[in-house]
Length: 108
Ligand code: FES
Image (cartoon, rainbow, N blue to C red; front, top):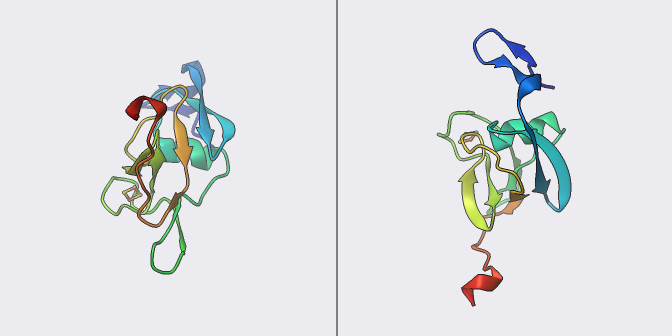
């Protein structure tokens, strides 16, 4: 669910739609919206699993303070998705525990 017409933010339907990849699945998002907002709009609520007890976590504070929303984004762990805007082609993965840095072919 999204607020399509907001008195301050304007008309959402006029924004450009981009494609991002969540755990290998292609999803649509509005350019510039936060990753967490795009995921929730697509029915995704679990963003990570805790290291100690493997408990699911998702959006909590929504303002970049609690770190419950961290995910792997373009190979970088611990990205706070509630304050990080989507970019076309972004690769977003559910984070297990503390996550880990993913190497790209260019690193070798
Ligand atoms: S939900 Fe708290 S930092 Fe993102």
